[in-house]
Length: 605
Image 1 (cartoon, rainbow, N blue to C red):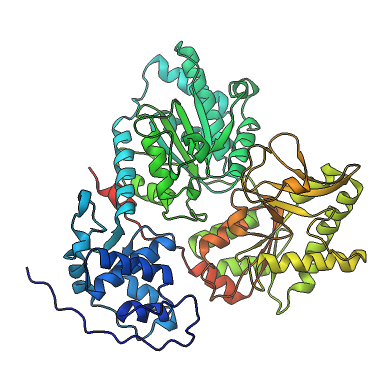
Image 2 (image 1 turned 135 degrees about the vertical axis):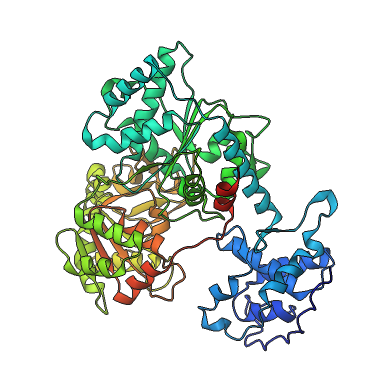
């Protein structure tokens, strides 16, 4: 079959600043045009140029497709839809007038390219799915593997018990989830008890951890009743802090004491630690398909934060007979790496007849007004969200002043001063309690709406109020966010703490699942000030009051998922700082990631 004629040559646009690091001066044609327009970054151009050279591909349309596939991964997608990418980028005025290839002939050029044919070792550089989704080979393989492994596990569903076993099961469910308030948790546990793989979803405060704790207690009871060896149970999460929260929540869950006693000794770890990190590789682990994990039950919390690559590594390491329970909220922010695995599992597996998704919908964490706001944001109802925020009350407040600093001074300074006074007096308990009272959340790290700006502002307010300026990075009452795991010290990425003056000098006390860990400030090298923190870093945590600083509508980080994640960190009160335009932009913009996993899962038979 003859190939379409190549697109006419594109004259590279003039470069305004030859010293701009984002511009590749040696780029030509389409790559240069899209690079100067800001669609492609330098890394996208370099990778595409190198792959085209190695594959002896001279078609500029194919090189552009490769660059866009690299760009997609950088943005969190695992592929790029060649039929819609132009319309998606048309929202940016800087892309107007770019010489886009014709979509139908573009797909044909890519499909016929040497980069789409097996090379040495049978590996293709590019892969097409459904004649529109373009993948780099690694992500194609990982997505196919995740789909195949999950579907293989659905074939091995545990059969439903009958007769006396059913009566024992129902009696256990009625005991562990004893009240009408636990109806949803009881049904979710019933679903999980009958499946090898269960996806358990629900928003904050819906009782996901209570469901997990009750389910594990029932599984342990079943094993005891059948005279089997003690179950080997693994609790895991993507980050150290999330793992610590999971462990604490399971051990403090609202199930009967006798059932809770069955869970004594359970420890939660990061997924990296569960799979066994290797010093020679950052993407491969000691446990894999030839060296499976030994556990009978594996629970993974905060699955929305798990990337496609990590899910592939987990599934290949899980034994076929192991019960796998994936827990999370598909409406929250996704992994910082490529993939939207939890959302894909909910939609893909949810479309099948042989798998049931366990869903919790009733939140028990916060009051009705915050629940209504979260629901309005989740479903995209900006009018209702604005109505609720403007109505205010005890639990909601909207700060839409041109200069929000005076109002934020009133809201934020009292808690900051509590930290300083407790830090000066050496009262660790009061200082750590103050950390859980309030969170100031920002989308960005830099800029006037970012974390660094508001950290400096709050520290300036402290100095003005106390009459003592803050001249050092370490001072009594400094709130801390740990930014790296340190198993030797017993602290994890995402742990929070505070600097306290003691008779031995200034010490950093880090909150953990047990007693606070006191550390010399010189030992805690990877930590940052936390008067403000990013919404991404806050995921999985909660506080009594949450203050959300929204960036302007042009911010690419401003999405519905970001806003939803931020407001659902609150237990009692939410203060939103932003204009009507900011709120409408946040609710109206979805953090859509291009993937094919949900289609693969739903379509496979």
